[in-house]
Length: 338
Image 1 (cartoon, rainbow, N blue to C red):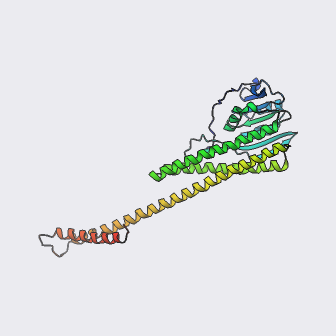
Image 2 (cartoon, rainbow, N blue to C red; image 1 turned 180 degrees about the vertical axis):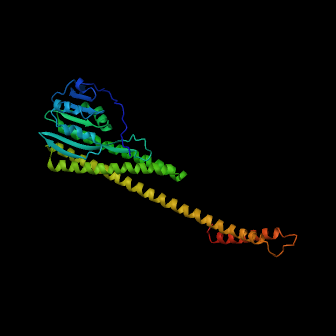
Image 3 (cartoon, helix red, strand yellow; image 1 turned 90 degrees about the vertical axis):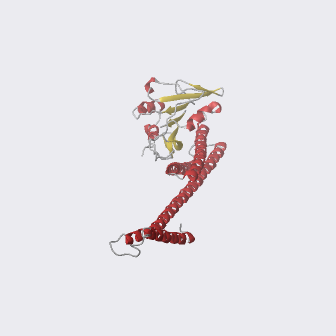
């Protein structure tokens, strides 16, 4: 099963600039906030935000690791689409791995509409670094609202990025619910397999979301309990708000999953009931038609039969067959079996 997010072109008021010729294949953006304005800079200064975008290659991370003084595995973790959420510290460099939602660009019609991918947030000695294995809306939205952000306040900026991730979940869940309502209505009207397959793709998306949101929630709770980021009182309150928002997103995902499961079960029961009705009617038709066939078979035997020499010999079996069929049909109709 192919699971690849949809790669989108960068859009926004501030276009990225390639910084270092050593990293020509890597798209690296360096940003500073100067006088409440986002400014792209040419090198990783103290207090800068370093944003690394795809395409990513493993061998290129070695030079980048030396340039930014970051453990190599912190950078390469984002390459694994199934990387688990966690936090880690090495040589006073802190790593946070979160799951963020994105559209699935798979060509397989049975795959999920949306999946989750890792986003790595690295707090170095004097910078904040974000590594994206695929471009995602959370970073793009954060960049578009970067005017009032201060990269030198790395802990709060980290929480703001997490906030955008949670907001992305909310928006995708609303899209999923809207798409589900449309497909259910089409299914009620047409009762086609195509809509059922689309609903199953939505169900797969919700499975990814529930799993990712649950792991994100556990990570946020651990961050709050261990104070891994050394937050002050205001920042801890902000983190608690993020925990609440993530819990709401998880609850929404669970509710939509339950509704969708109930809907699919209901339609499965409807389909099974319709099949039983069709089989029952076919059985009744078979019984009704079996008596004319029996009469015709009897009169087709090469033996003496009643009324064989009568001028009405043809009409008698026809009338008899129709009469028996009508009586049997009336009986089944009265019993509401047809």
